[in-house]
Length: 229
Image 1 (cartoon, rainbow, N blue to C red):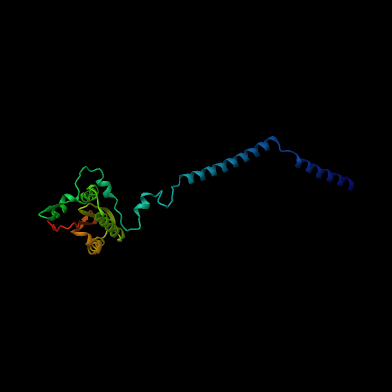
Image 2: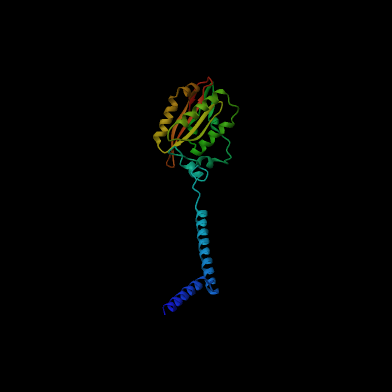
């Protein structure tokens, strides 16, 4: 009897082992294959979604290339004003500051009353057009370089226009604070190099649309006395 039971147990073990090694049925294989395809599809969709998110995200380089105008609008100075150049570009007027300087009986006369009537944009135009007023000499270039240095070395001001002809120089700059404008005008008027190059001229503060501007017009020293009218 014991032998019979052992034989039966052995046969059951063999049968279980046999069925466990049998290949999957067609239905089971199809179900398994579909599950695999579904997993792969979900993985592909996840990868595609991640790629789309990265591709749509804005560029955030901070070297000034992408931010472009923003990297320029937030310069180290506290104030920048780029509107003047765009506003006067394309104007057809040809006058420059030199039309307000005349010579009478051996004396130079600067007509300040007409200069004071010019708007900020007109002043910038008139200063820039000094560059086309004949050939400059060493005195003109020396004055231009010194004025440029004084403006660029000043704190919290923005250069707007600066040119010299053989007769005079014009400078226009801007700032948020009127005190910064006054400080720079005072520094320029006290500068020994500027005093040695000039016979005199105009220093003026201007307020326009909430911004503060400094105007400087210097008549170069050519040996003639200067009168302000």
